Length: 102
Image (cartoon, rainbow, N blue to C red; front, top):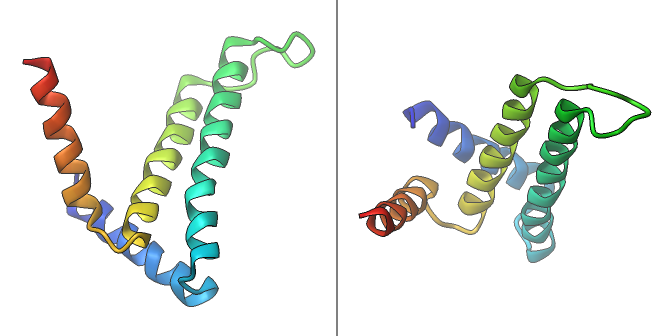
């Protein structure tokens, strides 16, 4: 990932820290935000498939991808909010996945 992504995650964490504090309740909300974003991605996919007969096709694959990107970014901010480095955490996760594929 581009360095600007990691910097943006750190900046978002700092902005949220300043606005909402850093206590356990705030951290809980940041982690729960992942569920909200995943739900939006799910709703977009349902819309892309036209699975709701009342609404028909309401989303494109690009819109689904944008919602999935929101999930990813929200996760990066949550990792940073735990006091951990998102880049290191994601790199370790990718290495774990690569080892399973060999």
